[in-house]
Length: 198
Image 1: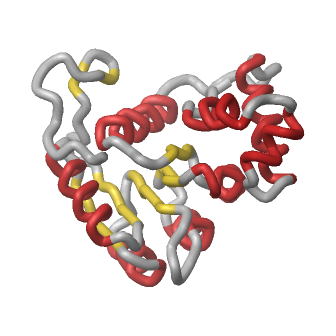
Image 2: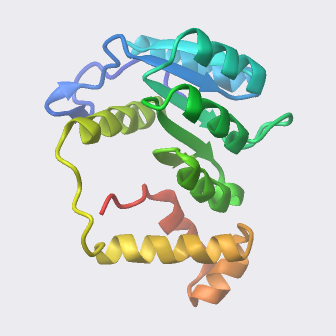
Image 3: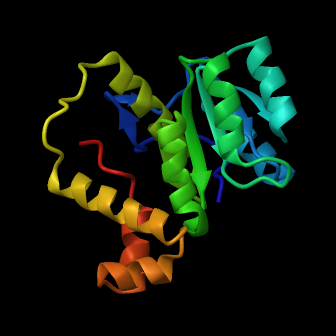
């Protein structure tokens, strides 16, 4: 569900400030017009400048006109995949932070998108506050000190192993759960969480 208005009080915050785009630009790419317009409206209410595109040509044209601070890309579209959009945007806008939106069935594709240049992925259904927090979190990471390239945490190592298994089984969650030796429901709950940063 997309909430249409920003939180009025005790909402989540980044560095002590209310979630706000503060004029930052977003290229929103999704073929579902109703979802796209609802999300665009909710993001505008949070202070972002949003350009919406329903397909790959429109997304490329918008990126060429004005490179955005962020791109939010649906992984599944009828004329082109989110990976095609990422492949087109990364060379045009190397500083743009890209978030892909995915469902359970395309988690493996989302991981591949990260390898192609996306910065983060979120599972649908997506809440506008969750997306805003993710976008501003990416910006904070870029401005802060570089993360250590040392040994990953246990949580990160587990997450990477799960993603490798999902790629091996082409995104089949039931088969991945069987190979991992855990219940399908347990794996689904793990996949709903944001990937660990370190």
